Length: 473
Image (cartoon, rainbow, N blue to C red; front, side, top):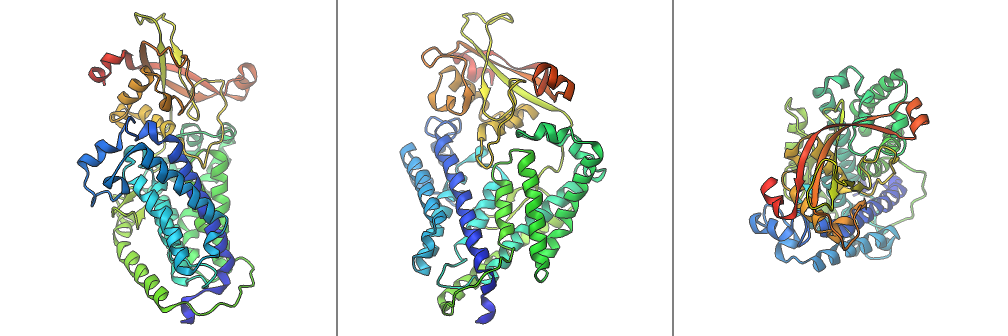
């Protein structure tokens, strides 16, 4: 069937597949390096405890069948290996069915991780990677031209990502409608990047231009994805430029990068596709059946998107096949941070030798300039931002974090930038305090060298020793 294929998108598919494999590689590497402290057998939210109370049908996962830290590590590093092979182009040198199986492996492995990841894996970009990764299974390889149906479905995801995010902003915080949200956002976003301080200090009129451009990109441009070329390419290119602006201004894990990957699938690159035989009948049947399934499953995301009670980042099926997205429906005006400190003193007092734990990404020492970590995802740092918003967000894991710090747990300390205590001399007490953070001015930066100024607000967790963690949290 000639209508089934789109040979002009041969290069677009190649670029999309290699870029997606790169995102998969980062996701699996993040899981492999962080899981023991977060969801391992001695983690803050252990997988064995989770699978005891959640049935397989509610959270399909290989780890529902068997779990050990060694097995999880094997799956995560296997995901890295397969992703690297796909990045190198292994799917191009195997039969069509073999390429489909190769793309299915990282999807199954990452679905297994997300479905037992609990709070640590509750972000929208997890579902987005799974939804895009599932479609990649059916995009084909060098034996067939790209199926136009799959390309359409990739644009459908991109439309929902951008249009849904635009709607949640217009329906949410009034500052989006007043064009003032970016006067606060660069300072209060979950994890600032190395350039966020400078973005925050842009002139206010330019902040208004940023917001207006965002509305155009998310509410108008997505419709153009379904227009003929070269308009669709221009629309996708504009989205890519917008996402690169966001990459420069913050640390949003791979959210911006997976959106860029999606947009690349809509860009028609100049190409001279090779002559290939018609797609096998079995392949056409499978692709059309999957497309019909995904369109049917799109009912709930669309209903949510047009609802006045629109919610952000929700999956409507346990396989994360079709999801709803959105970000920053509300923007914080001020920034709070939880600062964790420990002391080796036998009796904790206000004048004790309290030493601060330093995190890799979240603000701490006012003189420590933020670093660029995205697309790598610092999961603990992100959850610490939520913990500062309200202790309710940290109720399931913060007590376990304190306990691990009191034990000088090696895997937990690997998640931090620096522990103030030697490995064999854990603190006797841990406390947490809430601070108000704000960016310094240009003058303050020159005089002090600090990019942040912080003010003590209140006690977040009173001094707690190992035996008292359970009682206090």
